[in-house]
Length: 277
Image (tube, rainbow, N blue to C red):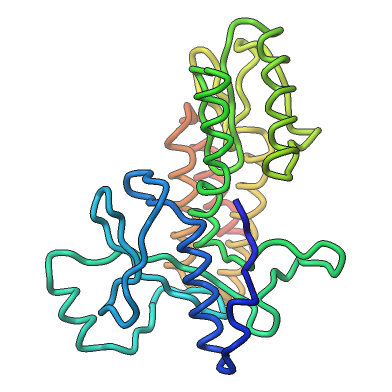
């Protein structure tokens, strides 16, 4: 998958907004597959189509591309107010493709002069782009290597098998594929082959045969961040609502693990910190 714009497509345009429209629409048209059904190609509507920019010929889902120089916030501005209202009141609302760009160079902030690759993306667009980019690895592992017990979330993945030699051979093939096809590599300090009884360290949790517990670093981070938020509350930097949002979010993290004792400890520490002078 190519993660750079074909900048020559905008050579005949002088307006920055026109350049952005041409480059982003061309990139989506050539690089994006349908997130709804997985169809490899999405089609572009003719110019000036109300609201939607792309559609999937397989599942009929429609998509509107929104490009913005700054980070995409909670509200998405649209100029065609009347058309947008009519569409929102209808039965077939479009999905959004959200993309950030650099107005000056259309390059990532991490781009170097020696190796100019990639497009600037924010945390919203990265959620879909990581699945698009890693789809090739998913298909390689499942279809070609025939790995059955494989799961991936963003850039974290695990493969479960009873034979360590099989896993070692699989790991080598995956490393070769990633380097050759996707131009990326596995982090050498984050790849392990271990027994299931030792626990699977995944997404902040350690999955054991009969329990799911929180990773030690995750526990430490929760206590550190929560104490920091309590101090901010006591200094008047945040209100009670913001403090409780943080507190409840951590309780949500704990709800996915066997952590009744840890939850009680966090509740105790919370009120202890609040009572401190």
